[in-house]
Length: 497
Image 1 (cartoon, one colour):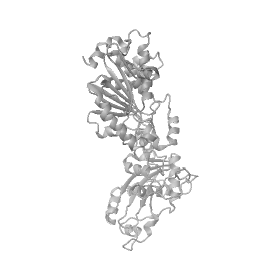
Image 2: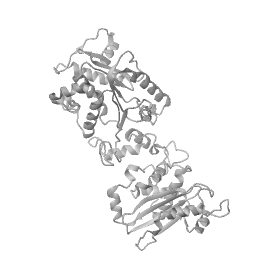
Image 3: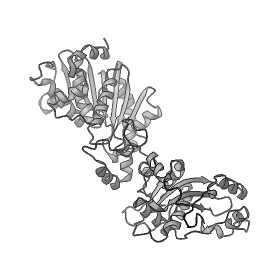
Image 4: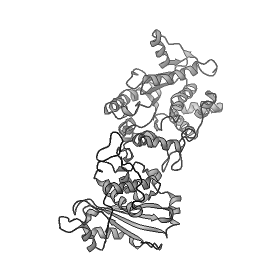
């Protein structure tokens, strides 16, 4: 009889058949069924009783995933299936042993008459070592039981019907070590996964530390096919698995949005990896020039787009150009709408026109049709600002400005001080005065990737230069627009780090 058939057979017992209700009853009400934990309980219960299932669940720390999955899931599983074996592993033997001790104590409790009594082991070592062995490797009278081990620990010679792995890496420092990651992966594939009995289920719960961690390699397919990877960020983005609205916290009862925002400001690298489950993304690059910019918070959504439409007759259309050092160097164009009634700059669109002839560039820009926009608000409706370097002579002894002018594009010189430009745009972002249209995704990535050449180790104000790459040209074009809107008024006292 399969595990699913057994659970279906005991469904008449009510609470014992449902992991969530079981945890509530077994804990005496101490375990709290928060919304996301109810959802997770249904997910892991289904995986535990489905033959051959492979599940990875990623969630932020201190959100209750270990209490549910490393404690109450094994209790529920062995209570209903006392002849099955569970292998519970974690980054350290002490943590795995801690959960094993909790589970063993629950089964040994004489106040639980429905549960099997612990079978006495035939051979144990004396003293503290023997006690640790009893807590980490024990059996039920029906033949089932649990074995707990740390990553790198020996579990050879033993098999499991349900294999649980809780946080294969201990902390951020270990997660950044290639040696530690390789060791964890080798143990995972050569030791842990080889302990599967026929039809065994494997559930991995984790907090992400690095894009090349065990979860990242599973996602790449290095552990074979058939894995389901579910990631739940602390703050929801579009298409959230739980069905949350963008910006909604995962566990607001313990970590409301305001508390998460404080955590986020402490270290953006750790925030993106550990809390948002997106390690190694453009959000995690140290030395970001615009660290406050977040795609989840600064991308216009449906209701916001509708609100902007109400002010469509009071906006200014702006265009920013950035050039490279020669006629074939990187060139970027950014368009934005400034909604004066809201004091809001919407970065609307962008294109990369690198290594294109001047007439082709003019045709691409004209094809956007933005110049025909009507803005009857009494102010200059359309503004084109270009990199001051565009007035310099290129190898053909003719400037960018002059060449574009022959193609019908007239530019005005923009702000020349790079630090003043960065300060203006960054302070506007901090004040909530900048949003990005969904179609400008490439521009959003550029602004998030834009960084300094050298990262200040002490976190003091940076005195170096921004790194020049694909992101810098799009970012500079956006900065020209910000300076056109606010000039010196938005500079404030921004520390450039």
